[in-house]
Length: 373
Image (cartoon, rainbow, N blue to C red; front, side, top):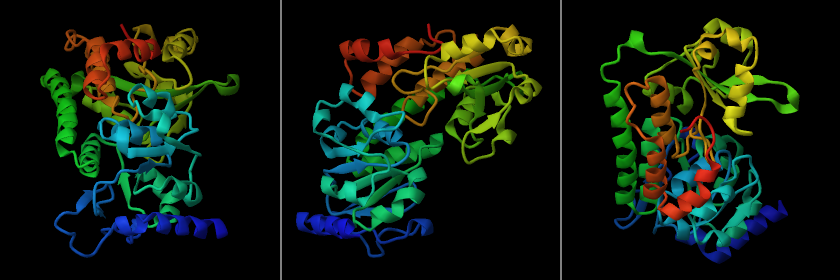
């Protein structure tokens, strides 16, 4: 408790409690952060909880903590302003932002790397004037961090529609609405291209699809499927497929399934996510398995490793738009024969992250894995 009050004294001394409007609304109520009308020159961010989070001026020391930090930083750094204004973030998880951000942020060496689930005592010394958390981190960290009096902006990112809302909110946070609209426009153009390619596909002609996460920790193979409401499921639908697993995983997190259930589904196509290594290694193992050789997808050569570079293309990171386009080429190859995924990789890292051709060739292309040309 003594350390906690020391953190509050530190913030008061730094002037942060004066510079920013306190967050007073309990997260569970989804009430606005302030009950009074904002000043005419105030910056207001409408976050994923529907709260209006008010700032006296655009924040210049933003900190990201909690679950899904790499997803949050992935979206933040689509804005060039993040290079100067993001002061620190949580590290130490499997998908660590530090494995990617040095390639897009020349100021990376100045960032503060916090421990996992960093609480008030770790956050306060960074002297942030804004915190950004994924909504999944609210229950673990939200209440304790709110006591610091630092405005918290929540983002969700688990659907295409919410992703656009989150980008809009980040555009407000950086006072860069034009950049937010440019990113949204880039993504929407590719969504429209896929939708146009599928416009004449009847529901009966859509392949059944299984997306599984493959694990072989300890030498024991296991399979999990994503929740029905998560982005991985939505990508299958947008790419013109029919997900077969939704009733087995209604929500809450990845659900374990066994081979007997997979055999019962017997999908037309199987897409394998393998976060620990190259997904093509998992595909090869399944294709060599006598049980899997009885499946329709195996017999037709329709088991694919979901691509990744430093992070996977299936997750709620901006890379999901690459994952959608790739998936459309696998589910409907005849309709997307002219979609050049490698050209899309170059375009994505150039337009979304500002990387030049040399940086992409040196840092992204060697990291590519999965079913790619």
